[in-house]
Image 1 (tube, rainbow, N blue to C red):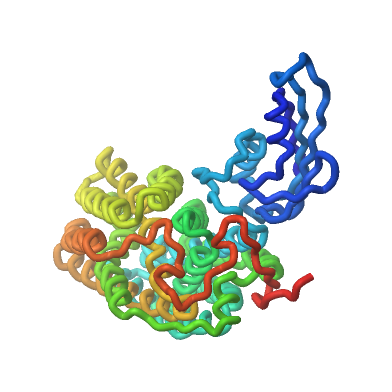
Image 2 (cartoon, one colour):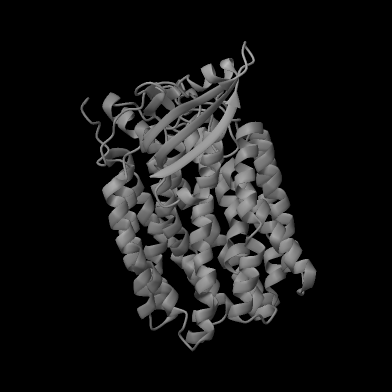
Length: 527
């Protein structure tokens, strides 16, 4: 339990306001004279007390000394330290008017919702590590196995065939729920990723990571889907920002561990064993992870699940075209640094870490901007600028141009994710989102694989990886134009506005109740 105590001097009107139940960060209910407990909010335990100490003077302007005491525990497992000081400042704030803070929604978020988002972020961290592992280590594995750039690119492309696994299985998330699929995908992905450490050839490594990467792709889709369908309309991009940050944290773990590749031949194998450490954490998550409210509501009401195929074609097509450039530009970055610029594993790790640091701020800024000012223009603009900077970085020979353009590319790309990633969830009904997500993933990965194969062949033919990457730069620029022209604006609108067959949640009203959910995802009976 955390304890917070602060003293203020107020007049009689100020004291009256302090004695009103809070309706901003949480909804309070009275629990005795000058004492309140929680009705609903992002706390596991909570109590507020006022101690009125003395008065000085007379009349309406009396100076009254009041000590406000809080005892509470945040319902944000694992990630609560990141919001610790922000919540303490919010509780101290004498302005109790319900409002949107840059770090928290205007709507009151219940304990189960905040717990769900935090746990999904933790699973996203695991997926982030496993999702980038093969791309970050393949240049060192290739050196170990004695293969060239074309073989690397073909292996990375072949690994993406594993998305067919997630495409088939993601549809079950619409019938069985998000929770069992999240846990099943995570467990199986961990085991197959770890098996990569036993590979004796590039073919063996590619085979094990084909399954692992397919499951990881589906896992990332599931955690983003579940997070965006759980939170209020005003904060969907903010929730994607959180998922992006936690996923990025997992990806950064790979970069931190990457220097083991310099220790000895085969040192890269250690990075594939790290996911085994996630197993106890996953067991703990399984005990506490609830089902999303929208899935429970749709299941209870047997909501229809028609797919608007025009929307699907628009999103899937842009995913295919954009990933044809973005995947090789990202996946072959280490090969460019090591093979073309002569970086060691430690230098590659240092570069990746330093250019990625500003992105940790770009992601939440992107979420805030997208929620407040809209998705289309902001997301498309960031995507276009990121692609231009990325292409320039591949034409550099090192020095400040590489560092500046590389850093801008990573930050701008990260800022675009909260604005654009949510479309895959927002425009389709609850009981079709898993199926749609699997199909869009498959189409996006097909574009990714095609881009990797084309870039790999051009790099061998031209003996210049940078020029091969630059040959595809126009593709995502066209996507940015399509987003502005053809995509609908979804910011600040409930998912049910786009999917009228879905039942509305009772807490669309910020002060409404939150349905009880057991960890199995089934509604709890009234207490």
